[in-house]
Image 1 (cartoon, rainbow, N blue to C red):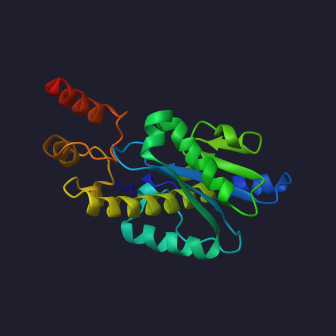
Image 2 (cartoon, rainbow, N blue to C red):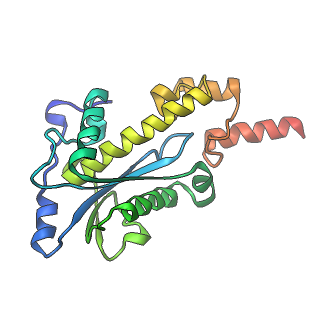
Length: 217
């Protein structure tokens, strides 16, 4: 659901400015998308904005229309330092979704060159690989411009992956639900079964597999 009007908080550049005032030379924002879906990877982006070329209208990706998301992501790739990385379904099932999300963020940051010397990370926790040079910002995608930019880039990148996967595995509605457990997706799981890109550690998928195994033993 999009947040509009007074409900939508406008992020600013104040935390980046504070970090620069403390001596940081390159400040980046980090965010991930895709922790809740039943299928597909979790995707993270790291973005270092140029203070002189910040796109107009940066917001938390959840508050933007598809058209604005696409336009802002394209502009960010042109005017900012941007990196996108993923953690696979196999890594999600092996590590757990929290650690896989952190791994994707660590990978995205590692791809930035030159590397930021201070990072603003959305959420409550700083990933283990970023400790010592990062701070966690609760609801950072709504408060911090660099994190909002990362949320936009990550969402557009992951949505594109899910559209591609929807063509490979039709019937689950991933082109519109991005793998989230909508009613249609859950019904398709029952009707069509579990695909190789479903997260087997997630309860709705696990339960279906368990039922299938029970019926065949």
